[in-house]
Length: 432
Ligand code: EPZ
Image 1 (cartoon, rainbow, N blue to C red):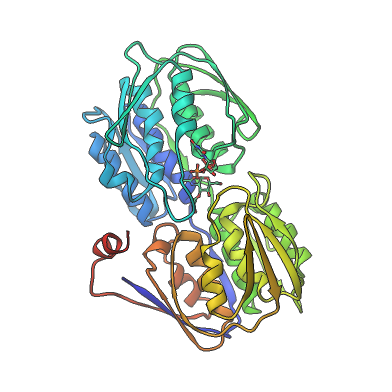
Image 2: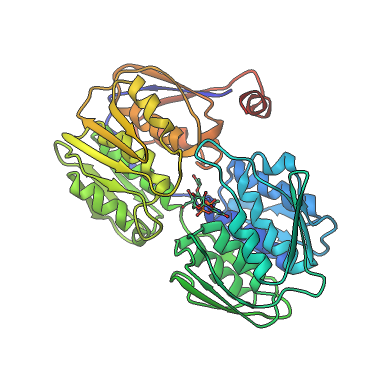
């Protein structure tokens, strides 16, 4: 398993560019199954989860070609195998995003149920219930769900009992080819949902209200090829803003969308971090002086993103006072706290709340990544820690951050990757 070796204490200085959003690229790739024509996607980040989704599309019979500059062409002329096998789904639960498109396009889908993961049970019961509302018959056996809609899907009025990002995306992709109107209430409002809707409309879909809690979709008989540029990754951009602050440096994050980061920016400013406009799509972040502890609760968008909670917690270990961090989205998303404590942080977990007392001097340690965003949190802490920290199982980071070590090194971080003898696939097998 690859490791990162990080020598802390170096203020980061310079510019860092944001990649395309993994969590927008994943549904966008799945949406390519909705047409037999070629779809061109720009700014697809070359990260592990994207490669997994591309392999999954090829498994169904689609053709995937990578072009220069992060562009990908997908053509699902003929879907020969409308299924997502366990071997793929167990490595990436977002594979369930092919459920809606496969049923909409072929009338069938056989998708392995995702197991849980480090941050929680991750069920897809809401995806399934929504598809049944559109007339699909869904059965479960041997760890798979089999969905069928022999007479096609029919539009309906669906109210999600709880906001789900990929559930909203899955349902949107099913409803665009359903007969009649679908109204989705209590829909997710994330920028990635809006991005998917924009792509589907370019393909000929009729969608209104994406980005609000109520999305209206008029089903059409077919969709066409299109070209779409993926939105910037707000979680990567937010991670770099925090990296700037925790290292005591000054970074300009370019190619991002500041409007997607308002909740984080507000919390960073409350904590004493200066965040300034640095031109179109660019933000400058600098920790003016002592950091102040602030309380934070994760919420669905436009609230504070759960995917930035771990990174923000690392910052709060360096802030003056007590910070109450409440995780309302996932039931087990504090794994990073244990590793941060091993580096000297003072964090107490009480149910859904982490109580962080700071500032605490962090010292280097051997640390292990447990999930994608926890990994980022450990890297950020290592930037502030005295000495050299060794972080193991960085394949978790490679799932969702493009060349994270290289981007940090380019702005002064003393970070290097030690490649393991074992292939990452073998490491992941060993670790799972
Ligand atoms: C998406 O996951 C993101 N992944 C996650 O990012 C992100 O943390 C999450 O949304 C919340 O913002 C992608 O977009 C690929 P949910 P998703 O359905 O859609 C429960 C990362 O680090 N739920 O909005 O799976 C669920 O257990 C990843 O990039 C059900 O109970 O999240 C959770 O508690 C991690 N039944 C809550 O809803 C369902 O059928 C929100 O989950 C679906 C979800």
